[in-house]
Length: 451
Image 1 (cartoon, one colour):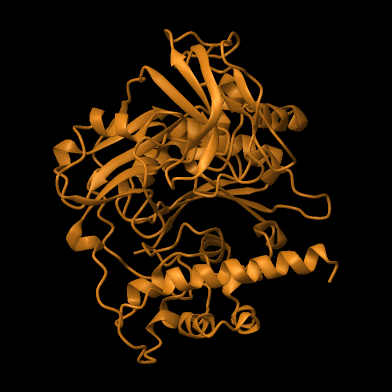
Image 2 (tube, one colour):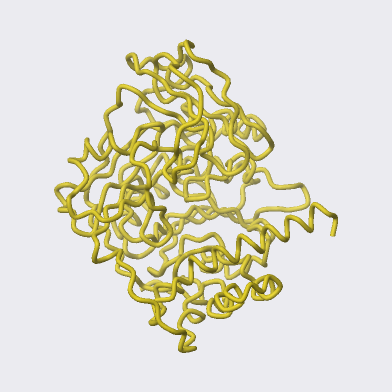
């Protein structure tokens, strides 16, 4: 068993990787797609098309609205039907570009051949520009624009890039599948990012519950022979895929409160991001596709899938293609059961960072009656950030904003370990999320006032 893991907190939920043996299938394209302009961290993109415009696959339809923002491209060819507000999966109104599909014609210059391009370009500025122009964002959850993360300030230096293949969330298997089916492209994408960061060490980190993926990635690294690159096996432990936890597990370095990974010389990117970088730089393909898992706690394996999807596809269409929403489903989640978001609107559409359609039964989602805190400290023992969730919960209920900040509510990563461990069934994550929001608003207010 691997010795590599983060030392503080964490839990061991059933990983439930039921769909790990399901090969990636290409999801059909619906008659109409709805492409969100807010599918990355930072400022939403600004639409640069209007109703009646003709677009091809790869046409720019949204331009960055600031330093932390990203390009959005059409995932289909056809005619723009409308540009306006539409509800996302949480029910919020977000600007979408609606496109009626007409064939599947791609923009000139996009390489659609299956040939693998192995030579790593050496022009750092050109590579960063290509990553930016292709709209690549982090696909591990935060969807932070990749060109920004790969271009740290001159007063910092990366001595290691970590390629995150942990996929520690229960049920999710899309990263597992791409590591098995497309390992060379992932390794080449990692080598490209390694070059951009000055040739630093590259570690591809994978949990030990994915032996097939580990073997596949090790084979690709050995075959391609890029320097200063290795595959490292991690002990299975949630939330190993968190940036700070992964850095601690591999490098034994701790990222301080409010600090970024680059402060300890590290950059973290997901394996799916590495694949997207490969496609952008070597194939000139914008980020319009990703891989998602269709799974559930009672869904037969025969009805589970890993789909290669295009952005802008309604979840209702995906569910229909996968056989329909199962009768037992009491909750439908986008993401994993620990950090995913319940889907309030099945007409919402996929975005770059979509990772799953997860069907959960009433038994697994029903909240038990909340009891009194018995000061058992299990929540503190399980917290990977070393926080005291029971204390944050107490000062939040008391309305003590200063107490919330002093207890470091702002450092919570909302992983759910505390709530999972609580024998009193206290909704710790919900309350701490509210406390965190209040503290962050107060910090922002102080900064804007120059204090």
